[in-house]
Length: 124
Image (cartoon, rainbow, N blue to C red; front, side):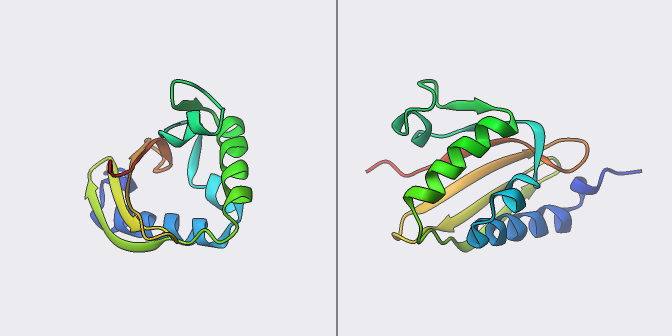
């Protein structure tokens, strides 16, 4: 039996759920999409003074990071541009409230939860 995330429709739906969760500003709703051991990499992590490597591991550290981010950006809003899928990952291409276009790479575990994420910002 195929794992649920091997279905392109599942991955595409997860991308839309991810956008909706962020737009809700509900941290528990966002974190529910992630595995307990999830890791996140972003150039914003060191900028917020959280880890010089740019990678955080575990939901508690992700909660701290995203709480700080949501507090700093009360008008945060993502507009979905597209979702790209593979059997075990997806890329969510979106535009934020400031007009920046970002790609978020999300790898899924066997349960269909996000186990690894990487925010990819344009270089200007």
